[in-house]
Length: 307
Image 1 (tube, rainbow, N blue to C red):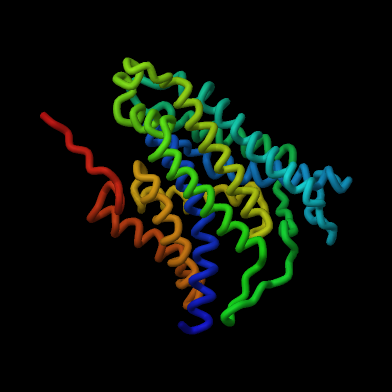
Image 2 (image 1 turned 45 degrees about the vertical axis):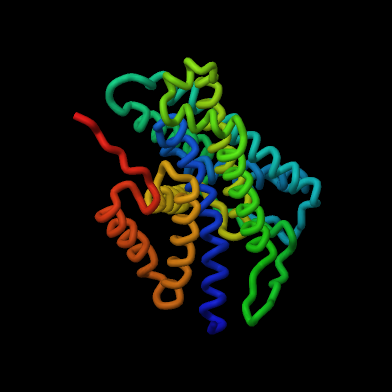
């Protein structure tokens, strides 16, 4: 394979792994509660900023800074930042479910859509008040020296993102298919009333779905931070790409969402070789064409209404 094509493939897999994690977050809440967290992109950027703030504080750098000025946070500080970002966003997911989703559950209409959108706007506005509209350049966890093999080069952070995302997705797939809690979540997704009669704590699983989904958003933001410049406005781009990946693969199919994320990442990377300005066009044309023939996505479940 030509070196530039191999480079595009590997870079696409790296970006795609981040999209897949975000898409997986959308899928977790949808399959368990039949709702979508439209603030998920804002959760990604908030998770990134929380992690960056912890690293700033560990180095004694003001929160308003836009750069680390060449300083490299210690490994312990980076691990603490990761923990705070993941746990913090998990708690935020719990708050969203309690305040923004639960009150509208089982009610006619789709008030939860506006509720989750509003929660995202509030989150972004609070973030703007704390961190401002700045972009922050974040150093990679493993340094910035390019690793070269087979004629292509990748940053250590890109390889780390691909590896962590792959491990998390495999672990999630194992939990969902092989463990009792995964079977309980699938039972709640299929028929919550029946699941409740079987002794399953439906409410706890729904809360858990939002906590897990939001924690994945925090992890995605933390991993993406050194690859792209962190900004509160990145929530629109990454959130929309992640949602597109979920829709493309099938929102109710976790494996399909992961496939959709990698597909979009690779497609985006290959289009970049030709013309970056057509990248977004190609992605959304693909999504529209797929939905025209398969409205539930490539691997989504076809729902049949009996009359």
